[in-house]
Image (cartoon, rainbow, N blue to C red):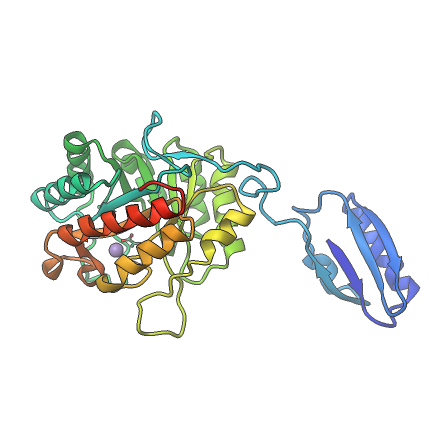
Length: 340
Ligand code: PEP
Ligand code: MN
């Protein structure tokens, strides 16, 4: 970090800053400019609390140089990480192939899920999504089928070979969900549930971490860091749209997060155009854009009867639409030297 002193700061104030820097176990390099003095801090200050210096007399601002996260950062690991969708390694997210995870927002019945699973498999998906535990805004809305839903997902995996991606909402559900799922999804509303992040970090299944509705990318990467710091390095970052003032979409899908996350992190980036728009007719275009922007995978809500879906019908594409979208995505993928 760099400590920028105020114009007219005194020598005693600079000396005090130097003392604080040394107390942190770091070294200082003082640069006296014509207008201001700057104290460059030398050493690994990633985990030091820079706010401690921000309010010291004579300090104007403290500028961080290192990212606050480490394991998730490209500074520590240059090559892109490949995260398996299913253990032992089958389809991997982060390579040339754009992996597609598709399925309903929620598991509603065996018939519903199996029909959708076969359809998305046929169209080329490699993962199957479907919530058994649903984080709903209203306590009166459908909350998911729970363990019965997980059993149905496991049956769909048996029949299709698709990797099962499903949400875990609480620490006390981790063991149960991990028993059935191939990938544990941590939902947007739980991105800063630090106990849950630790718990999924302590089990071996890969994790799909969704960006919080109002989280910055640094906060998002620090959430990934929680999981990784507990030993689980198989983390995928999922951009699913953020909350803005805009109302024509449910969420504003921040596609620039794809190249930006790739710039600062080695973790694969997944795009969710369904929560990301809230409108089924926008999903196709966002899928194409996501592939063009370099997304490593997509997670898409597909339903056999969107009009009667128990959750998120408005943003779910039909099985037929999904098959057409896959064809378009393959063309885009080929144009950017990828496969889908
Ligand atoms: C979902 O995938 O259906 C979901 C609830 O996602 P998010 O946590 O991104 O809202
Ligand atoms: Mn949904």
